[in-house]
Length: 264
Image 1 (tube, rainbow, N blue to C red):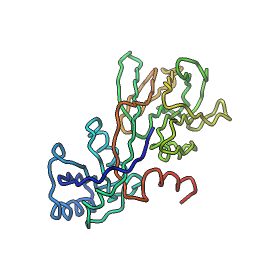
Image 2: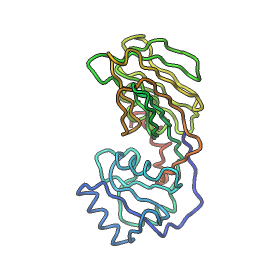
Image 3: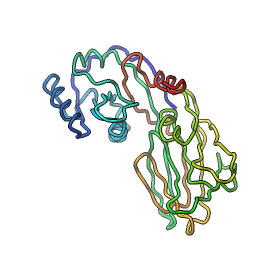
């Protein structure tokens, strides 16, 4: 679940700039550092990420649990989570910014050897076939079996913030940021052929059991963290962890997701 709010005016004095390393981002880093300084991230009042959405996800993962606000400026190819770049009046922009609070998903994956691994995802957790054969999966919600056998290229659980990413490409629904929901979306479902997924309460616990794992290997991916040869994947939303994203007024995540639903 994600919520948006207007922060009380804050004067961000100590800014840490993080670059994706591209020439455009490095040039912006030099310009901004000269104008505002650049403190160590641990000592900063706010983190400014210079790059695209890939960098923003990395930064959000890095500072998860610290409550540090993250403000992105687009110096990459994809910038849905980012603000427009400008080196002028940055502190004023930061003070006027609106905050979106994003809660990540937790993933608990058990592989074929019985090893258990945990990860978090801001956009989605995906369960994907690893061979030429489609995956076979059993899907349960809060301990109740809902699909005895899903045959598909994969299945994903998306947060509202992630509903416009991989989920949308897989024809999943776009979720308003303040909706207490998660999207459960199949990827190229073969059987049941007409199943298009489900909307789940954000307090639901999703369990995906892999059938015929030796014949049809499956990987589980939480954002960029991949675990191969999984047997079972358990997914839930972590309501105790909040990530703070800052956006310029009129360009909040709520507004961007609303615009996405109308195709602009």
